Image 1: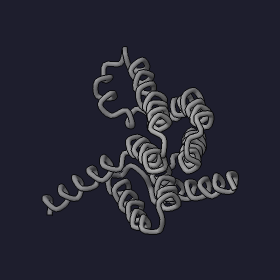
Image 2: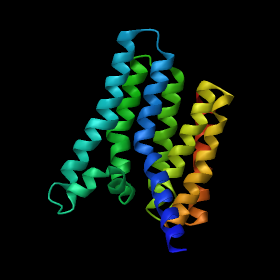
Image 3: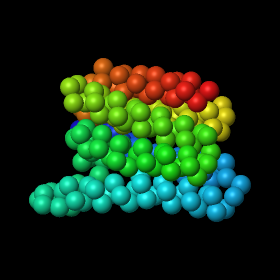
Length: 203
């Protein structure tokens, strides 16, 4: 019985790691850029913008924030762990780096679905961070749900299979006692509402 519990714990942790929203967000944005691009120069500009504002600069920010912290190597190894405990830093990064990234991509005429996805991710991150200052909801599920919705809209109904990721992540978070069922449900619901609002805004 103990071995079974250990295997389930390992599986739950593996699901959480594989579906890391910070990594998946960047990958989905880059995939959209790659599949929607017809101009190599434009593609390079979009990719460099995403990597600079959503990968390199956030890592530098986290390094600076944890430089004097004894556990900084651990935090740097898992920046998501640092951010999910600090909603204020998510807000700072969203406004300081996320919004400028969106504006630059808009100026560079990035694909509409790339812009919609980034806007939905930013909106869900900001709302989730504000809510997490008073009551915890699942930022992880919120971000992944946005990515699933946008992937289906970008590449078609064949990607509906990605919806299975949402209950799997919900189970993993609940099994690891990271979130309650209410927090999981609220995170998912937030993403659905934000994605719908983003699509209506663009339409």
